[in-house]
Amino acid sequence: LYAFSTENWNRPPLEVKALMTLLVDTIKNEVSTLNKNKIRLQSIGDLSKLPPKSQKALLKAIDDTKGNTRMTLVLALNYSAKWEIMNAVKKLAVQVENGDLKTNDIDEDSFASALETTGMPDPELLIRTSGETRISNFLLWQIAYSELYFTPIFWPDFRKKDLYEAVLDYQQRERRFGKTSEQL
Image (cartoon, rainbow, N blue to C red; front, top):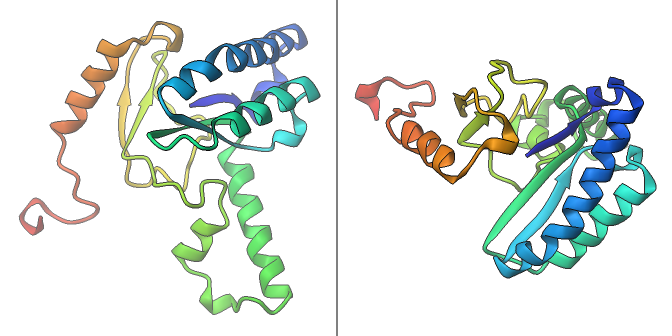
């Protein structure tokens, strides 16, 4: 879930404060539901830039749910795909500088392992709510072969039936990953 982008800091200060308060309240209110449903909470993004109260609530929830194994919910907070890609490049550059990696050994796998989402599968379906038809700097590397689904429904109003519609739409698609239908 793309909860807060790095660009969202440019919103009016009162709105940012309200969003951070909502984040803390929501996390505190949902931890018991996450545990009941055995859902592990994780986060991607530069958490060090979040207000201390938000960081503390998030890290506590992540710790409180770390043993859950049914599903993982990943919140993107203070996240930007461009930021993530730049950080991955820097990580690989340090490895090259230290002699731990040769430039010619950098490939898709080594690059992906330097991303925030290392160890997580790439999304198969990206659902974009609110009638927007842009990606908004979200998981640019990881969604290279994701199916995109756009809906006019705003996130707070997105319900189980809307998710079912998106999944049914996805199931009608042919995922070819660069191949032709005949090659599948």
